[in-house]
Each structure stands twice: as structure tokens, then as C-alpha cells.
Length: 121
Image 1 (spheres, one colour):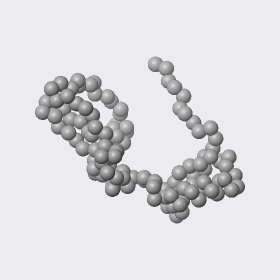
Image 2 (cartoon, one colour):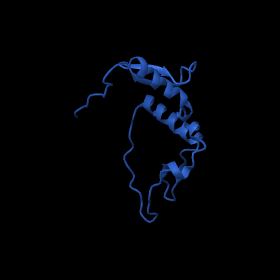
Image 3 (spheres, one colour):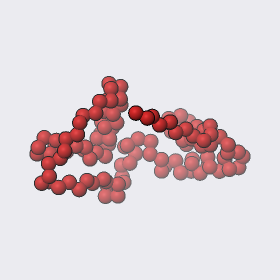
Image 4 (spheres, rainbow, N blue to C red):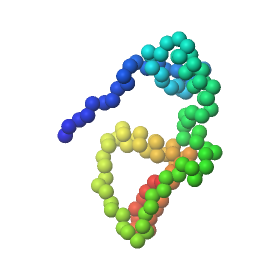
């Protein structure tokens, strides 16, 4: 199996606190930016800090009709059960934590089909 190289930024990046004093709310900008350009970008990011989404719960208030993903599933067709993928215990924990966060925020829900299949939408 051929592996692909991990994509790297073209240059070093600087961490910018979008909300000063909140080290967990950062974004990154290119380190090549200098002077007025750099300051204008940082100023723009901070002026618009309210549009950043830091957690799934931050998406509350957005109409689900705008961002909801729907799958067109024919109820008369039996779904094909795919082979279970094994990621290892560490990745399984991370995946489950992300699913739990999205479910708690109401962004996905578990659907039980009559044939016993489970899906998350």
C-alpha cells in the first residue's frame, strides 16, 4: 500500500488569540505577514470573533433547514452492511467522544431502522 505525504503549511504559522486572554480560542496566520497587513488581519479576526465556532454547541440558533444533511434512502431497499472498521482503542475513544459531543449538541441523532441497522444523521 502506498502512503501519501502529510500536507504541511507552506510556511510557519503564528497562533493568534481571536479573543485576547482565551488561549483555547486561537486561529493561525502566516508568519510572513508584516506590519499593517498583519495588524489589519488580526483586527478583522477579533472584530468578527462572534462568527467563529469553537464547539458544536456554538452552532445553536442556526436553522437546521440551512445546514441539515439528508440522505435519500428508499425504505424498500435493504441497506448493505459494511465490514466493521477497526481503528484501535485510542482512535475508537476519540471517535466516540466526537459522536457524543455532536449528539449532545443535537447535531446528529441515532436512527434505528426496522431491520436493526443503526445510523447517525
